[in-house]
Image 1 (tube, helix red, strand yellow):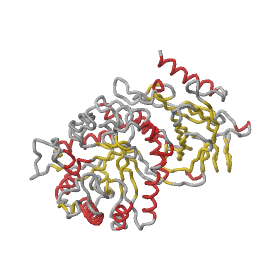
Image 2 (image 1 turned 90 degrees about the vertical axis):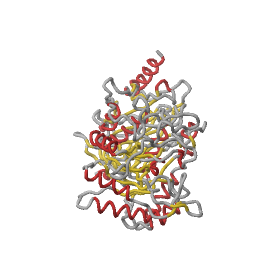
Image 3 (image 1 turned 120 degrees about the vertical axis):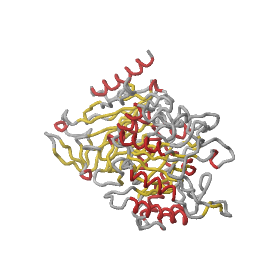
Image 4 (image 1 turned 180 degrees about the vertical axis):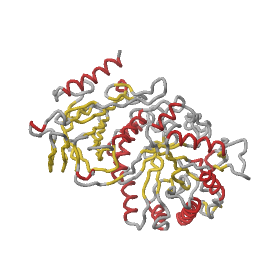
Length: 543
């Protein structure tokens, strides 16, 4: 009954809103209402992403991987994940395509089964005396075949993280040196090409070995030489192919000096993608994760990393593009009922918006499945809230990023892109649990595209149009995301008041918007997220 009353209350809020009573607000009885204006500059593009911006990772961790007394990986490893699971297949297929990065800490301890390189019966046995806490692992060739069949069937685009520690020797300063021994990697790449596995769209060298490294490190000069070696290998093996896989590195935490040297020594085009990792919330055991997620100033801190990396690339003679290669927010597998719950969509969607603003081409979420930060539940494969957030972003947000500002004093985060199809898509995130925001949209340079109205407005406020312009056909589509029962730790997300969940056949639900007259304000409830698609509002820069 509690759910019904909440659900009905949420829907009632919309019914009153659509009827034009703008003073109504959603949330508890103590919430206040703030009027604000979203300013979107439609005259210029500030950044651009790849068409398939959303990416998720698949990792190597075995069931014995435990953090703070909790073992959260179960059978979610590349080696033991159930690739025949219907929900898993449908979840990946829904993106058409989903980029998937294969890798993680243990990738630098993986050997690939080849003729003369057999897999041993034991793989990744827990051993505290070993680097990363586990013995060496092996990728059986049969499993590689199974993975590629899954990738082809689900339409995934895959980027494989190669073992970068083969051939290394210890140096006096504690780092590892010597050139990368690429023999085993070459065998895997050749086998992949010979089998016609076209889902593999990129090869990434190493995981978290940059700068000071995590467990091990390699200096930038040697790493650059190894990247050039990988580039040569890819060019040779894929010779004659119209399109060749990307070469990516280093898959580590941003270090301005180290990254700068890597870029300088791989100019102009040996390195296609420079990948960095983000765990800016600290360890998963932190009791203050939610406070950090809901603090705008804390979220703003990560902008420094994006800004510094883009500045580095812009000042270099390089064609290299930036990706977030792995981002789980809280390291050591996240935190149950935080990084796999509704509240984490505030952090995740804000990250997607911020990364886009700084010309990041792709953003890989740790993880697709596994740990306490998976887009899918580790045991049931049911989508967690962030899965639906990612899918809505993928379907609604286009590649061209527009400058966006929210004028009122509030905890609203605002991002806008040219829409995936036509028009503009706006994302509003309300980090305040006690304030409803009535947001009005103003655009610098906009065209209303409809059968009755094809007019250019240098500065358009859709709430102050002449009455004859307020035609019912000038509508927008809204997707309001909230937590079940208002519980930020819930793993159930509501879309416009309705629970999102797979059906008995494991199909991903349809995500339908509500349609609202564009003259009405956007009502952003406390602790809610709203995607707003304005299909009839066209910015000149959106093409």
